[in-house]
Length: 426
Length: 181
Image 1: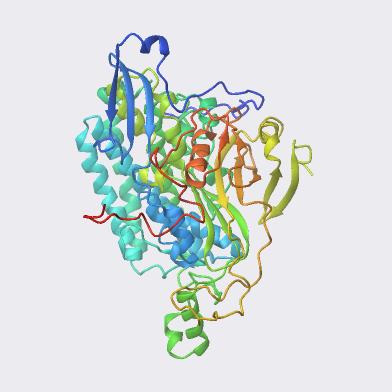
Image 2: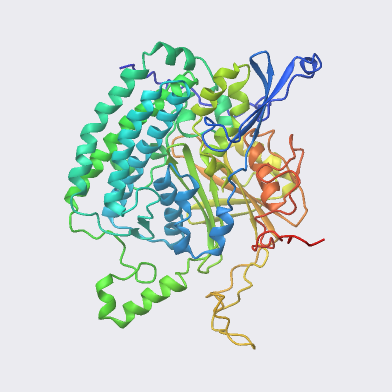
């Protein structure tokens, strides 16, 4: 296993006085070259099998070298934010996971955390641990899909079958907990929608035992694979100061040598009570982004295991806060208690009211800092919901990373930024 | 107060353990450069625009029904429990900044704008602001002065209107029927 070089902790990440040189988010062709008539403009996408969704790149080529690139987005704009303004807070939770359909659990988490911050609601420990566990499983799920498709694009088709085998295990666990394989809506304001079902912990333990072996297998297939190394090492370079100036977060930032992870540096839930390593690599190329994600999967397995240890001791504890103005009353009370029936009816029809204010909540999604800015006017519907999508920022780095690359490497480089277009366009 | 020296600072509010600095739009770039260099907010994580048209218009609850009777198809006619604090102008633009330092300090820089009032671009301070400002123009119609690519980002170039504004119709596009001239 390759050792991870940690940048010196005293090394300044970014000296604050540096005015960043113009970093292009649109790469224009040098006018002197453009006049030579040697430039070939190629349209790439929006429906191309390897664009990870509907991304369109208009690429200017000089021979085989990329000299200009315009990224066009917006093909899957579905107006999530506008829709969420029309729905009660309660119903809006359903929209959040669909924004980033690979990191659904993290999206759900950030919106629920934002509502809870406005409400000032305390959630029971069991719910926090379970939220952490599912978010980490979701992180593994998202990285598996990335790894499978990224390798597939470079011709390593068998990776896809292996990663989707483990992805299936995670989806089965989701189904066991929430009844849905994806977009579970299991996180409810105040806690969880249902108690953890019996039999989940042993199944999850089996997965935790299996997964490190599977990750070792991926490493065996790719890490020292000559083709993989040649097509990823030294390509798609992003320096640490450019990465910060362009607002990169998550694995892209850590692969550029910045030791930053919100789970450790700005902990939410109980991330300050678990031990895990944050992989940081110095080169800022496609290969390092791959290594960071592989190591993150290992770290996530560590966290899942620690969550399981805690959860098994919390058997029988409440899974949702006892606040009848916000949380649905227990089902059995509806037959005997008039007040419970009224509360149930009011929450389902009108929705609960959330105090006036604005908050910004951020979590570390598999793609980086996923933020949610929410404004409430004190009513039952959000006034404004804005998601800070890490993929959106990652795509801004396209022009910088593909500068001077070969057209054949373009797919690998753009793929290594791990963008989900649903989240970019919203 | 730590941020008192920020250029163009109009007011500072603390709510929900978050700091909001309301800044004069004319001195926004100066304020941002100050925060980046003096307070080490190296990263701009997000720019979020909000439209406050009709803020507080549902009124205070207790008022059920109109002269024509209560509209059952429109929930929330009961209104709010208290009127929200009025806002100075129609649009707010919120810059969420992050210091990549131990402690993960965050601050929100807020500017208030009327319809059509331009805001200076902060691309010279954080190059990553580029797409966020284009999104603010595209979705909310906030003109950004001095932007390197002042184009729409998400909608088509010839799209009319700005979809996330409160007065943008929800009902979709008008449909032409066949046979209609």
